[in-house]
Image 1: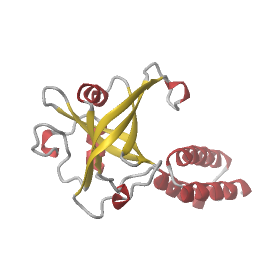
Image 2 (image 1 turned 90 degrees about the vertical axis):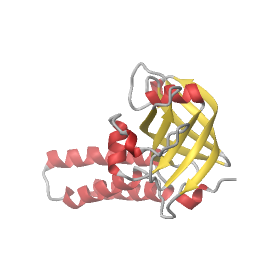
Image 3 (image 1 turned 90 degrees about the horizontal axis):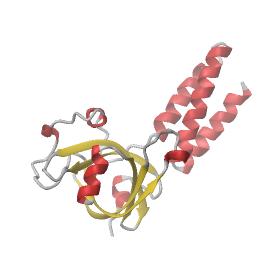
Image 4 (image 1 turned 135 degrees about the vertical axis):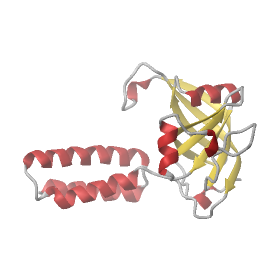
Length: 207
């Protein structure tokens, strides 16, 4: 059994990672997507239709989860401009060079869902993909996945330090940000972070 706790991955927590794929012609692609560990050898991701990542997954039935916090890799992957120099020399699989850890996943199940309950509304369907872990490679024992909850909490704490010093209009802006950050945290984070943002919201409401 693969022990993802070695790289700080907990069950049913939403992490941000770089998903790499390769098409039938050997062209590599990277995209920034969410990732969840379901326990055992099962993992989960959801991807809007229309992306190169999804097309490659549907064609090859595999993808790679790259565990990294490199800001350039996240940016270039999101902008679809990660150059070939960022990949390893493997011809049959797309893996980011020098990534602290990566997980190779074989697709098990795909379910198509409408986006009606998704925060971003649109016409494109969402593909929910359950996969089986084929391999876990740890290149750096300090490897750690990125979760959006902690940055959202830190932003809310920084804003709180200014909250009592600003006028009503600015307070509304900070409160709106808090509410959005709490929504994100409740969706993607662990119980400690959820408890922290709830405590902070109570303090916001006192002032």
